[in-house]
Image (cartoon, rainbow, N blue to C red; front, side, top):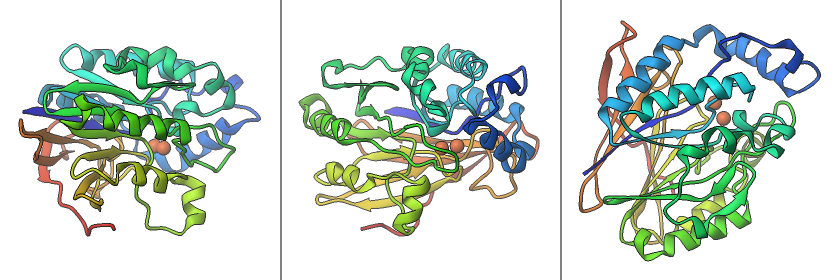
Length: 307
Ligand SMILES: [Fe+2]
Ligand SMILES: [Fe+2]
């Protein structure tokens, strides 16, 4: 049995507050305005600490599906690394980047994500990784019945665009990873920031979805079972994605620090148990309770399947 805790969209803020010298005349200004307008009023640092502590205590492996920082500020990276180091004292940690972790082109070009979080991306199959700017991806961790496969979909975009792209090179590498005998005999657990299924019109997918989601689904199509874990939507959601051979559980986590009355949006973490035979034994949401410290557990029910 492997127990996985899934958190996402930490959006860790700098403990030093907004640093205006890093804000002017770039995307960070619109990102900060967005934070104040939508995210700031419900962001609770205490929830984030409670979520990480509970997730680390419940699981063998903690996966973080991106947007770990808010504006890719160096101080945010440092604060986030300290939080994840705290979790890593009791549980193994794997991370993928979100669009907020590569917020500006120079952040991506200077490889800040890999610099700060490379310790959580040590692959068991390093020869199959591509040297992307966010780090070597796919990163594969063979753990009991599961093959945890971390992907990068994070690319810097202009203001008001938040879409992701895996890219042809990384998709080809993913196909090689999935064909590797040590992966093929396990249940794949794919981590990606952007959602792999999107029911909206293509224009919206190009604005803030995964631009090559169809390409990702094509690579996954031969597989009879597995999980694809994502974030970005700030909403807890579970879908079943039909494949040529069976179906995949496609599960999103909520933002890990958000105070909201809707339990699908409210801060928390998802907990999955993968049995020794590779089947998904359980999938539960642990939602921060009204006291801000304890958690309400509820099953993660699948909404209608997607073809
Ligand atoms: Fe986010
Ligand atoms: Fe995002």
